[in-house]
Structure formats: C-alpha cells, structure tokens
Image (tube, rainbow, N blue to C red; front, side, top):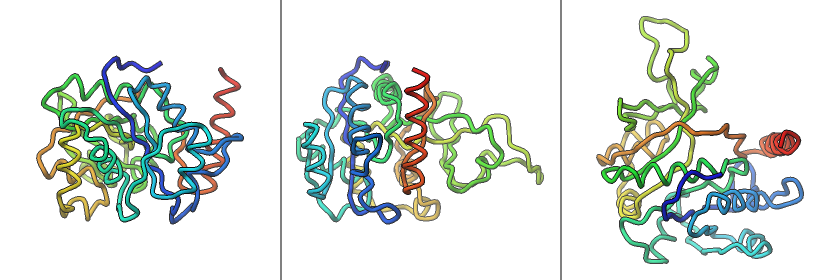
Length: 256
C-alpha cells in the first residue's frame, strides 16, 4: 500500500521513439502493454490523478484502450521532465502543487514508492524536489557508470549525484565503502520548481555526468532523498530488459 495521504498527481512520460527499444511503451508484457503496468501501479499509489504524457498516437491509442487519461505533448522535448512540465502547464497546476514523474519504462515500480516520494516532498516545505535511493551491496554496481549514486547530508538532502563511485574509497582502496546509495529515477516536484528547472539551460555538471538532476542542485534547489521501502525491479531500456521484467513480475505473482 502507498504511504502517502497527501494530494499529489502522477504524470507518466511515455514516448514511442526510444533509441534502444522503439515502441517499448506499448510492447506486450504479460499480455498487456507495458505502459498499462506502469499506469496501474501509479493508480494504486492513491494519487489524485494519473496522466500518461506522450507525443505519439500509438501510445495514446494503447492508453485509451484501458481508459487512461492522456495528454498529448510536443515531440521536441529532450526529456521526460520537459514532458511533465508541459502537462503541468496545460492543466494550469499551481506552483506549490506536487507532481510525481513516474517513468513509462518502470513497469515494476512499487506503488508505495510513488506515495513515499510525494509524501517526502510534502513533509519538507523548504524542499523543491524529492527522490529515492536503495543501498548498493555489490562492488560491481558501485563501480558501474550505469548505476547512478547519490550522497546526502545528515538530514537527507542530496549533496551530489554521479555515475562515478561516490563516496570514493580513499587511498586506492578498491573496496566498497560502508554507506553507498543507488539513486532511483523517480522524482516528486513542486510545480513551480519543475517549471524553473525546465526553463534553465543545462549546467556543466549535468553535461559532464549526463544527469539532469544536477541542474537542480546547480540552481540551488533542495532535493530530499529517502530510502525506498520495497525492492524495485528492472526498468526496461532494451528487449532483454522486457524479458527480465516479465520474469520479475511472474516471480512476484508466484510469491504473492
């Protein structure tokens, strides 16, 4: 169950033209389009509203088949964040409203994580964004550039995100430090901060690391980070990932 009793909305950005896996949003996963799995999990978070944001009629048609609200957005957007910001503008949401960006390639995301990230932002009035992390337990993940790491201060505010191993093991020590956190790609935004973020140009940290959240830190935004309450299964970037997500969901059904 979701932990949040706060008012929040979810936007699911879902484009068709993925470089590594075109059409993945509507690819079949256990007999349903992948985007439907994401939508159902967002609805189960008890969000006030859940909207699929796309620029492609094929995604919109698939969403209409399971009666999901759809917002058509510009094909020129460079990121899902830009797409979410357009939806917030279309519906004239207020600056202090909370919107959660749940990626359309996250069919295994626990509803509790969606509720948690919204509630985390609501409980910290000075924060402009919130996100989640999980512990890194494998040395290979600590060193992998495909695993994004986050370090926080003692109050749970993000200090930095990186594809490099942070915090670094000093003096050439190849071991994994004790407290290492993997960042999960789910965000809650206050709408005013979202609009400010997407209006700003990319900073050199973002360009260097290829991590959009570094733009928010560059702008001085406070990002709250909490540990996800449940394991997150695989996101889907490739056809192989789709098979992994299918196996993960099958195993979860067997253990339910």
